[in-house]
Every structure is written in C-alpha cells, then in structure tokens.
Length: 316
Length: 293
Image (tube, rainbow over the protein chains, first blue to last red):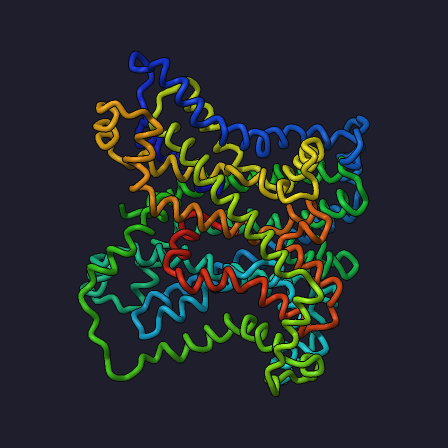
C-alpha cells in the first residue's frame, strides 16, 4: 500500500492539486478543529507505526529478550549477522523465492486475465474460481497444501503418478520445500495479479483495438502490439507489490515447513521470528528487521522510478 | 503513474462494460470453455478437497491414490468443535475484526476529512508522516509493539490485537482521497447555515461516503480476520486466540487426524467465503483498489 499511496500523492502534487490554500484564510478555529479531527488516528499511527521504527533500530544495538530491559552491545548484532551462515542462507532463499514467485505469478496472470476478459457464458463463475484463493487465509492454505503435497497420500503425487512422473517429497525434501512453498503461494496470489491485469485490460480503449482491426491487425497481433504494451503500468506495479510481499513471506512457511527441513525453507522473516521468539534474541531479530527494511525501501524506490518510466505508455 | 492509471481504471471498467453494444449470444458454446473449465478446476481443487476430506473417514484420507469419500461423515465437525473451541475463536475473530472496522471507519473518516478540507497548521507535514509509515514492514514494527503492549498490560488480551489496527495509514489515505473529490460547495452551504464541521460531516457528507466506507470496511475486515503473525506473538492462551491462530494451534495437536483438521479448516473459512460469494463484485473492487494480503 505504501507504494500506491506515495505514488498517488506524488502524482497529485505534480498535477498541482491543492487541498487547501494556507495563508490569510487560515483561522484559529481551523487549527483547533483540524488537530482535534486528526489526533486520534495520528496518535495511534504514531504509537504503532512510527515510534516502533526508531525503537526497533535502538533494539538492534542491544542484547534483549524483549521482556526485560536490554543491555547496549554496540554493533555486535550486525557483526553477528554478517558472519552468520544461516542468515545468508535465509537471505539467499528469500531471493530465490522472490525470483520464482513473482515472475511465475505475473506470467500466469496475463493469459488468465485475457481469458477472463472475454465474453463467455458463466464468466462470473470462472472469475470467482480464480479469485477465491485470495480470501482463503494463509493458515487454511497451509493446512490444505500440507495434505495436497503430502508425499505418501497427497493429491499432487497421485496426479503425477497418473501421468507417469516420479513421486516427489515436497515439504519433506530439502530441494523441493521452497518450490512447494512457491506453488502454494502462487495459488494464493494469482487472483490478485489477475484482478490488476483484468482491470488494466478493461481500461484499454475500444477505439484502439478497433483501429488495429481496421489496419488489418489480427486478434493475436493486436494483443502483442496494442494490449500488452498497455499492461506495462500494471506490470510495474505488480512487480514491486508482489516482491515487497514476497520479501515478507512468513505465514505459509510457519504453517507447513517451519523453515525446514534443515533450514531449506527458512526465509528472512521466519529467521527473524525464530531469533526473537525461539532463541529470545530480540536484538538480533531487530537487526535482521533493519536489513529487511533497507531492502524494501530500495524496492519502493525502484517502483517510483519504474512508474515514472512506464507512465508514457499511459493513454489517458 | 502506474497506480493512478490502475485505480482510475477500476471505476471506469464498469461504465465501459455498460457502454458496449449488447452481445449476440451464439448458439454453440464458446471453445474457450475448454480452457476455462480446467483452469477453474485447478484453482478450486484445493478448496474442494478441503471439503471432501472434512467429510471423509480417517482411513479415506490416507489411501493412495486418493478418491471420493464413500459417505458423508459429519462427525468430524462435531469432533473438531468438541476438541477445539472453534466457536470461541470465531467469536474472538469477529470481536477483533468488527472493533477494528468500526475504529477505522470513525477515526480515518475524521482524519481524512481534516487532511483534505481543514487548513490547519501542520496539515501537510502530518499527512506525509502518515504516508511514510505505509512503507514500514510490519516485521520490524512488531518487536517494539510487543514491548508497548507489555507496558499497557495488554499482552495476551484481545485488546492487544485491536489497538494496533484501530486506525491505519491506508485508511486515512483512502478517506482523504475520497474527500478531495467531493465538491466543496456541498458542505459550504451547510456551513453558511451555521452547522459545525462535525455536523456537516455527519449530515451532509456521510450519505455520500457509502462506497468508500464499504471499501475500507472490507479491506480492514479481511486484513484483520486473516492476520496471523501478530496474534501468534501477541496472544498465548487458547481463550484469547483468533480463528487463524486457533486453527494453527489445532493443527499442531491434530496433524495426523486429517478429517477433523479439515473440518476445523472449513469452519475457519466459512464466514469469509460466504461474504465473498455474496459480494464478489464488491470484494474484487476493494482488493483491486488497495493491494491486500
């Protein structure tokens, strides 16, 4: 949401919208009313959204179990992080997860969105089928996929057997645990990407497609030459939005693999959780959190740059 | 301007649909069904199997290859409900979600209105600060928040789950966006007649806020209802668990008893699924306008 908000606010500023004009029209009653109206929300957001950021940074320079007062230890948590092979393994696996999850979700979503944009009887049902995993909770998703991907009696191994492919270990195999998590989360997020692409497709002006058809452009060629380039803003949004969420993967890992086997599916946030609430090393967890924050900020900056670049595709 | 284009398109999509000439239905079914049916089957399969497993016997969930259950075994549901306080967890989730929805509706409307309409000192700076908090990942906020909860004596209570979500930066942003689109003349008439800000908000603007408030409600409800990480660290006793945390706890104790576990899982999903089926179109618009999950 950060990205959307910052971006929309920026665009508004550029277009010169002003919500109010400061200066002579400012009145004392307005100051009082303004502060009275915003303070409940602003205080809550400050207490739970802003203060903790600074606090977390302070925690990262302490040795603390989060329940009793900590002791200052300088940059030792960061030194530990740099030399911790499991941290780097978690960072690497988070990267691998992002690199698999984001493109797979986006590449599957485009053709599905095109399909769901056709006028066919029963489309409401088809769309609902694609969207419904979106409201399924991560815990329920994890429970269901634990059975579907169960090596002994799961549905997926049965299906693989039917077409003559070898049985897989999925969550119980070091090599397949992370790909299995990817499979599960793609199912959960696909509907989101489809919704974004579908609304972008519905926004393609009909005149453009008609003009393409008049120029002798076939349906397939029109998709590649007209519709696909117009999906660029949606793609840049999804790229960043999915990446930011992929970097924060936790629930599904916690419910299915608990980071295992042998750390094979330990991602950054799972490692952070383990440090804070299994090893009671809150300071180290905060340091890992800072690293995560820096990466997310960098991705957000890329979004702003990308969206500026992509904006010349916009027809409106 | 990716996102502006997107969000604008949300609203326009519906008008565009209406403008299209009436579709002449062909008598023969479209060949697209040949792709759409398998696609839906793949997307729905996990949920269909969830339901099938929840009415199977234990032996049926462990045979290979898996097949349809031979009869409907409702007993799994009564077993699940007697072995885990699912009713209680659902109630906790409902209390927490509804409290957060109400909090957001009231507090974000007030703040959004003031940010959009009242030229008070510090307006712009405060709003930028609120926006900036959107960029902070929850995982770094949660550690100090836990300490805050200890100081407030709220750990392991429903209050710990409600307080951090009572007002959200996205809610403030959404409401402010809405109020900037409302013509000023509407409220000016009321103000000239002597109505105060609050009165104007309640009597003139509230009737116009329906769709935006509904969007905010759906987003807040889904986010809070499906939240897992914060309840996991903030609540320990089973009596204070939400349905998601309860289900995960239940899974830890019954991981070998698939039918009962699936009955619990179905239970946890029913409220949201019912809401989704009833208001699909609306859910989709809300989700598209935000970036949920």
